Image (cartoon, rainbow, N blue to C red; front, top):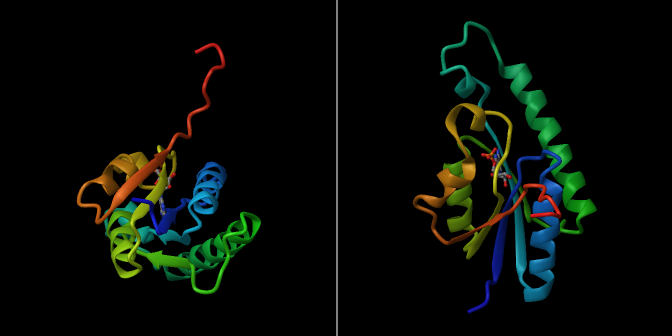
Length: 149
Ligand code: AMP
């Protein structure tokens, strides 16, 4: 059975070009629908929720930058269509699972690893996404392989 609706989750790092290229190729091969998502993680989560300062302005700037980057990437990879770009706020696993259910996606596409944000403290989002995923999950290999291997 082929997939009909891909959910591409990107962390907006350089690595996400590889995820987007692979997802785009799959999308064209299957002639299916694609939805793009980035989840902005609450800054307070990185500090255990106990921060003695107001982070709201910083959080707003982070959200605006993320929205701009998401739009640019979607356009660059020719994935921008009406309503297919989602910026969510919260915990990546929770938000990505929720969006997959809401949009009736049947395949979530992510990178196999990342080196940023809370992942440094809590481990890989990809591993996290696998547990309780509402559909299949495809992890795009982001490692640079040695041609001698
Ligand atoms: P990491 O958890 O940093 O190892 O990231 C692994 C992969 O999970 C990335 O390549 C993305 O595909 C996805 N991912 C990580 N963080 C986010 C995020 N905030 N929003 C959407 N996808 C994410």
